[in-house]
Image (cartoon, rainbow, N blue to C red; front, top):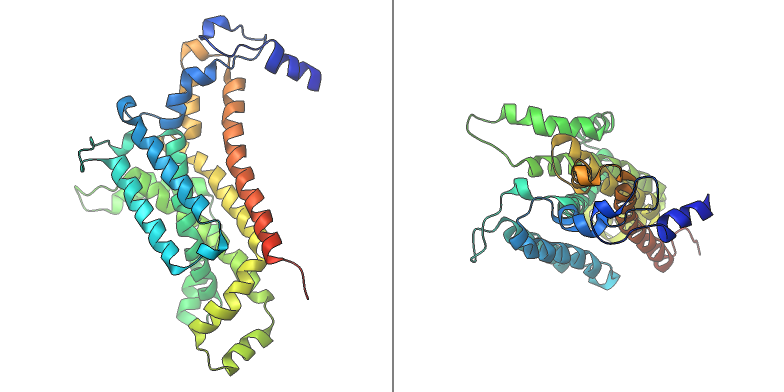
Length: 317
């Protein structure tokens, strides 16, 4: 299979120009990429304002990269994330500081995918930790609410939650009150991902020996100090591999928002293929999209492996 693929992808391929220079069934038509790259990355975002979308993506990626180093894992990091989120929202929405207003319905492409995934994973992780602690609570009311939430969310597919956020939730709002569709999809992704993270973290909490709890309590630490200083640092270190697996799945699952008419990375690709000029070249388009997903997922996986090595996960003295 490899020699024919190399022949198709490189030697017989067309890299620049219009679709008229490509012949279906012959070499790959990589000219699709430069011809549609703007739409795939920014969606319907106004072309003259796309520099704002680029800056917003750089801020999001930059914040993630900044947060990689362990010596920055302090309370001040929460303020960095809060500030970057506000700045991204201002840049994309506009209407102030002389920026032209851009409706959220025009946000799309890779920009929307990054927004949904970065914000979703950042919000879902702490919520999942709280749910895991609630499920191990000795208070019946808190335990029951956590169990009901986790089991209901894990019992339905993400696609059904997205449909509910797009179709059913607006029915419960007062007349004349509307909530942004992107925000509703974001909430559905956060709720769904948090339920799975909660079960992973609960497994890590159960793996901590009971003696660790008793030793911490014997030192006079209260519940919050025990969890923050003793138990959670050990538990979260143990569950790094499955947690990263869930976050990678959450990043890829953002492609499901295409079913509720949000122009994410996958939806913009599908839209370009409806253009008569590019019909018959879906293979090249989906390979391009797959490579984008792969680069981001591989980066997360690679970072998790390095973090495991730094923390010596799985090793016992």
